[in-house]
Length: 252
Image: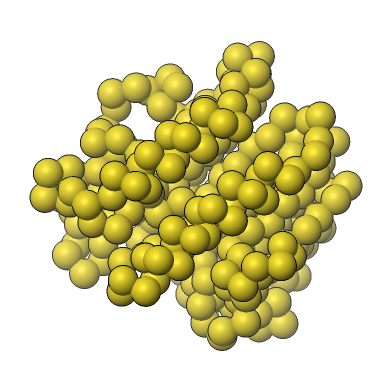
C-alpha cells in the first residue's frame, strides 16, 4: 500500500507518475492533495494497471486539496461525507472498509497560511477524532495520509527554530499523542525506528531536500494489535520526486 501527497495529480502524471506505479505495483494507492476533479483526470491509465476501483473525493474549490484511493480490491463500504464543512467541502477524509481491514485516507489542513486557517485546522482535529470514534468495525484500522503534524522533535529538522510553528505546536503534538492513545493506534514507522531521522516533506522554496531539511508529516497509523501480529513495515521512498512530499510504503 502506498500513501502519497501528490501535490497535484495532473502535474504528477505529466512527470511519469503512472509509469512509476507500474514499477512499485501496490494493491492500494492513497493520494492526498490531488487538486483535480474526477472528470479532469484520465482514469483509464490507472484502470489499465489494475486499479479498477477508484474512489475520488475532490474539494469544491478547483485546483485545491482533495483525496483519492486507487485500488485493485473493491471496498465493501465507502464514505467521504461527514456533515462537516472542512472534511466534506475540502475533500479531506475517506473511509473504506475492505475484507481484512478498514482504511482511512486523510489530508489534514496545514494551518500555516494564516491564523484563521490554523483555527480551522484545530477544529478539524476535533472533527477527525469524532469521525474515527464513529467507525464501527471489528477489522483492524489503518489510517494514512498527510497529517501536517510533526509528532516528535526527531520528526523535524531544527526543532528549536521551528518550535510552535503550525505543524509543530505543543497543542497539535499533544493532540496526536492523545489520539494515538485513545484509539490504541501506533505510528508504524516509529514503532520500529524510534530514533531514526526520516522526513517526508521538503519545502520547494528553500530547496530543502538538497539539505534534507524536512518534516515528517506523512504517516501510517495502525491499531496496536495489528502491528503486533502482522509486524508491518513502513518505508519512505525519498528518492521519488513527483511532489514536495515523498511516497510512504506500507507492507504487511
